[in-house]
Image: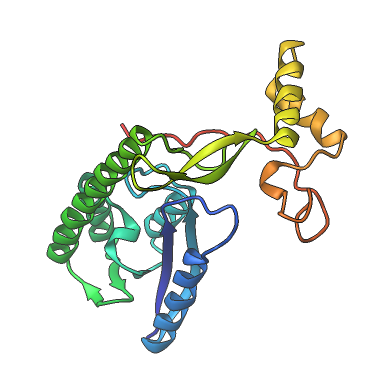
Length: 239
């Protein structure tokens, strides 16, 4: 009898330029895994740009709801760290899978038991802590050298300059006048009492594209349609 399966995938960083199709790739390989092992894959749930340190993931919630429904007997994931990078959260899920008799299969190693899940969970959490440390260390060092530590900074552009004192190169921020005009416009609207949603509505009505949609050749994306301004809400953090 063919077993029913659900699959889950995750990548931990936001990728607005779609430079990687990590979650889509995880879905593809989960589908192939299901075919090879004669599993009926009824659903795939994924999360883009959400850390594995939190349970506040829409795709994860949907997958766990599938598990709790009793409809599936197998969960397919690429590896345990895609499921969670927090040992406490992972152990909660292990108990949930055991309760509903759901077997966990990874694309990289096949079916795994609770002991392997526990060990991999510890390793995944340690990796997350190490990545956080090295990221903070790198940003601190870059700031001390006078470099920019963020991503795209609205109103500025990066320039690489020679640093004779340090014997190398470093980057610095210089004002981008076109984007600076947009920044001034946003702050003026805010000063006049408009809310963030109202500011976005006004900019959309004026057909002002978001900076993310601006390409090197112009102010619109490749499709020719300006990408609208959006209200971005922060993700909930795990306690």
